[in-house]
Image (tube, rainbow, N blue to C red; front, side, top):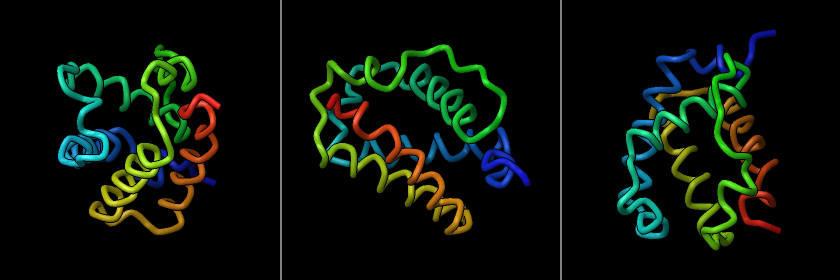
Length: 118
């Protein structure tokens, strides 16, 4: 059985998805403030490496785990939901199969407590 990474289209698809995703995030008033003065090129690269790893592709992610990477942000349910909604909308825009979008949402929800530091 193929990995989610392969089903999504590999590196090219993850790169495109992350770029579209961050355009949506920066435009989303619920979470855009978290990205002010952030090096978005570095952020996008880190996100591409992270998603590649969790989707079953090559592992080049060297960043923090989800809890320590988000603990200082004071995130709540609304922030988490905004990220998941923007990611799902991005994948729909890229014509990703609904079952694969659900798999991505399940992966996101599996780290929800860590991201929200609870």
